Image (cartoon, rainbow, N blue to C red; front, side, top):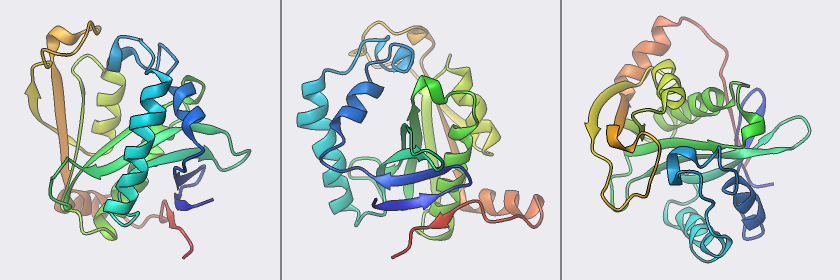
Length: 203
């Protein structure tokens, strides 16, 4: 396994060319896709021919440091979804997006917060990142609560793009949250001494 990082309960690894079925299964759940496509699944051929090749190309572009990473339970190895830590297309490497997409069976376990917190820690302490941002639908209160729990602040709102299909709450637009390295460091100091929440992969 090409491990990227570990948390207390999760292992994040780089995807391989053999992982299309994991992504297809994830994107076939209407609940998972609720705020992304209105519940419609991503066509398997799109995942095989476009999404997965783009994920693998991202590792080459960013030397494996940034991209989309598969998440598995540390005990048992079940695939729970993916996390993202990468810049916008042609964006600066010190401003990166944080996100995740988890299987419905993994919801309610705190995995989204645990994995995201570990990625923030890695971004600010190892990767030279200065700003991490995240976006979601305005009505997606679950994701917004996680962003707030991570110490991220609401910095902007935006209308839903006109080419987006029928999605619940689309009329309310989207929101953007951010956290800077300085804010993350102040947050860590305020929390006092703490056990490191992630372990880097062994070279």
